[in-house]
Image 1: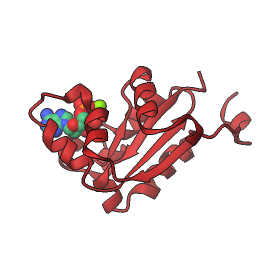
Image 2 (image 1 turned 60 degrees about the horizontal axis):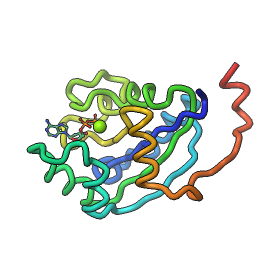
Image 3 (image 1 turned 135 degrees about the vertical axis):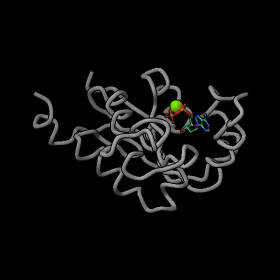
Length: 151
Ligand code: DAT
Ligand code: MG
């Protein structure tokens, strides 16, 4: 439904490169509601928990080092089909395989510098949101634009 939520995170490369505003703008103008946002330098422990599904893969240590190497912007967006649509807006895991118009396809080259994370399922989103945010860090409000976005 329209209360679906996704965990969206600008990774350290995206923050260093000044892409935060552009990324927020894309979700905002699509009509998704920002319900949580914070800037943090994740610990290695938090980064490892976030990427737990990849624990044991050859790229895992590098991935954890990278995510915990600097500031990230962690966000929760809400709206109809935001998990799947968010993934479409982000593009493929490998930026070189991502279509222009997608975030990775517009801004990235290498897999290990792919700018942004987005939850891959509603279940992953719930796990990730609980990992990165406390319940009282998520805002409950109704944008006045809602009836002009949803019929
Ligand atoms: P996504 O970020 O598109 O959900 P994923 O969950 O499969 O992709 O992998 C998490 C991150 O790990 C991904 O953004 C970049 C990195 N990664 C994935 N597969 C990789 C590989 N084969 N070699 C190097 N890094 C990889
Ligand atoms: Mg993933």
